[in-house]
Length: 160
Image (tube, rainbow, N blue to C red; front, side, top):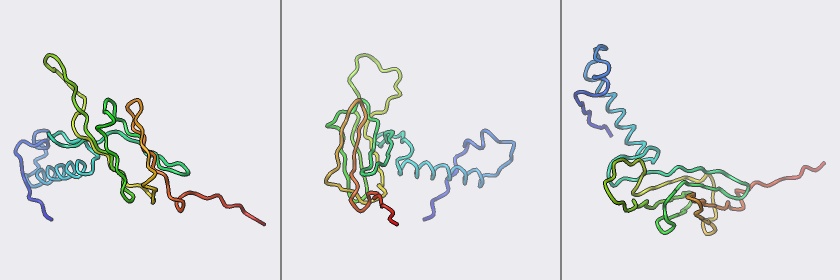
């Protein structure tokens, strides 16, 4: 699907490099490329969205042991009842909401994220969805997803 080309006067390239004499078409193409990449990263959850009502993705690690995949997501200050964990097929979906605390006075500056969050991961193999466990301790959500017997590594003895 072709996207319409939009040209905004005063774009970043025009203001920082006017001496390059780049015409309108090249700068509008670069602006469009940046917009498409931003949209792609936001929809994939890889980049934080700055708009109201959008989701942000928590920092998370996924590692593999012999019998399970373990996902550790940083969710400081989020209450257990505000987190949902779902496993379907090979997909893991962690979502919820971080509610802003009530404050007295005027808030002058904030860098903490609030609102809805969402983390999605595609697991590399079939898992036992009915045996998934999750625990929340010290602001870290740990989800343990057991592997099926077929995907577990098996040691084979060599005979002579």
